[in-house]
Each structure stands twice: as C-alpha cells, then as structure tokens.
Image (cartoon, rainbow, N blue to C red):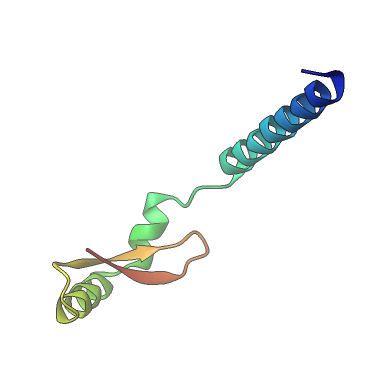
Length: 77
C-alpha cells in the first residue's frame, strides 16, 4: 500500500473513532428522567386508558410511558 492510501485510511479511522467517542460522551452526559417523575406523570387512569386503547387496536396490552421532556404516550405490545 502506498503512502497516500495509508494516510487516507488512518484519517478515516481517526474520524470514525472520534465521532463514535463524541456520540458516547453525549449519551452519558444526557440527564436521565427519574423513575419518580415518570410514575407521577402517568396516573392509574392514564395507564388504564392506554391499556384499553391498545387492546381496542388489537394489541395484547399497553402502558403509559413518559419521555424525558414530560410528553406521555401509549406503548402498545
């Protein structure tokens, strides 16, 4: 292999490793939603409504989920 090809491969490898490292650092730096906050946001009525909504659409069951920004959604399975 000639010198320009080795340099190109080394630069490509370095860029790949740095971008993966940056992504991992961002993932670990993101704040996690506490379980207490999630439990407070989804009431038993929300869980019941999600379960009934999912069952009416043909799923086995469903539960209320909360994203880190506080948005509630029904997770059907």
